[in-house]
Length: 298
Image (tube, rainbow, N blue to C red; front, side, top):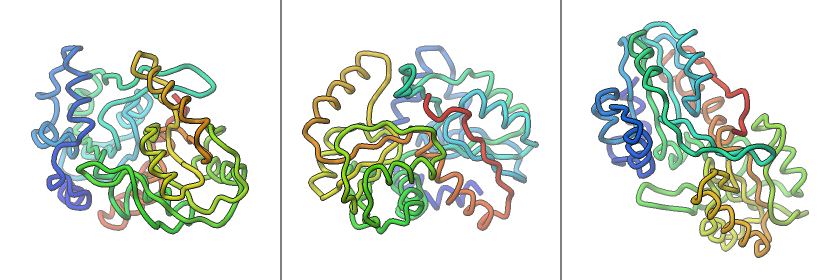
């Protein structure tokens, strides 16, 4: 299973994850957690792949986005020796709520959780950027699929690949698109900025953190009339988050797009509930268990 996942997402070929190669040391080193001893050698080099190796025989795969305490507690309670937890992130993240509190950003997972997982013979595998850029099975590909859209282009690229998709959809207005997104992502509300439109046929899609003004401008230049992402605002309660929030608010009056956020976690859980669930059951012949967060906006 590890080999199949590595090949599917080209984990070794793509090299170190551009985000978590910084975030994992940056979050764990200040609190004195010896992550280099806790995690597998391949993960320490690539920051994707198998983090913790349990028993060889996998009966069930648990699917989640962030290693929140409720997710880890459920995995420990329900998982049997050898079971695997497959996640998009190796750290938890408090992204903030448009109708609630701002978040703390990436926060460390108490090392005791990882120790308990190891003691029970359970495994953990995470895949971040390689899943975002995958053309057919990934965080963005799952949104394109759920919207029954036709992908026509890409944007928001780095050395790994493109994190954004341009896609054509049947014509609808902003409110209809928002209602559809709420159903798809099972969320009570969205975050919204920009213009309400009646003629949306081309959308930009960025799962997770899409609150990048340069990416939004690029999408609009490519004809996008709506921009669908996890976060349209950075609501991390520090100087960085407040600066990013101001940058976005300076940009908002200038755009003709509908900017729609569906929450970081929900935008990336969709692939677990659809494409990854099917892949594990079809390719590996194992049962899957979905570990949803009780509150997507956090």
